Length: 138
Image (cartoon, rainbow, N blue to C red; front, side, top):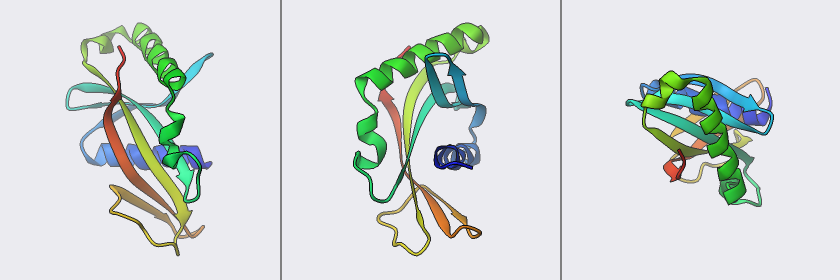
């Protein structure tokens, strides 16, 4: 499994554990993608997951959520709702999840929301932050 998919799986497990329901992983159309779509507490969530290694240049992915990226996600959400009109009754929210991928032997800075350890590869996946209502949309 690639790094991005594994990061999304960490977030999906965390949301499910909190009582959320994952509707789609990597929902795509020709001009965009939404990493995770879920329902939690009667709210439809469009979630952008950023997974980075410990040494990265973009603040663990936060700097990659540009206005253009936000617009693409919002447009993708609008198309998703056109395809699934029964879900348009839910209030919508755009969230961002920050996941770090690192070897097990590195120290953990702060207290992550979720830790997934793969002992076969000596890797650890940390859900560092989950930002609700990270940007506005539909």
